[in-house]
Image (cartoon, rainbow, N blue to C red; front, side, top):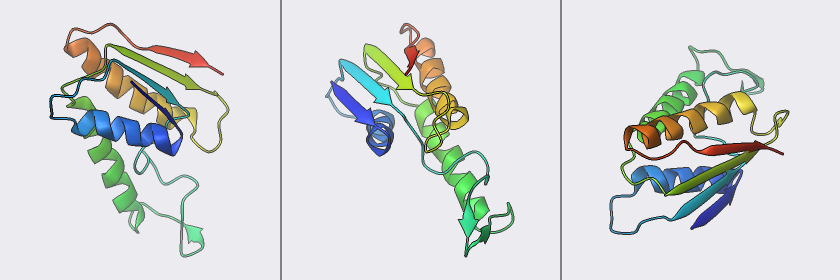
Amino acid sequence: SLVGYSAGAYAVTELMARHRGPLRLRAVMLCGVHGHGQADVQGVEVGGLPARPGSRGEAILRKWGAYLDRLKAHTHPPRVLLAAHHPRDTVCPWQYARAILVALDMRRNELGFEHMEIDWV
């Protein structure tokens, strides 16, 4: 079983996405999860200026897309997957966390597992 908070929760999602060995996770708890990159460049600065999609912001968007693709393709979900998130979190905004959790949950469902449980804290 694993528990991750913020960057630790991100690390747990990467372990889940990249897992290819015999280890089976029984349960995972993700708290305040965030991903690699983000779905837009809102709030991102490059050289002290707001990032634009045509600047280094493109790399942020590519990293986000590749990260979600890894989550959508994972093959060994834990039997129990729980998440806790504050709806007004400003470090790990809910809009990004939700996309991560939806990707994990959709894949769980495709593999015949129950939907995950998400609690607000």
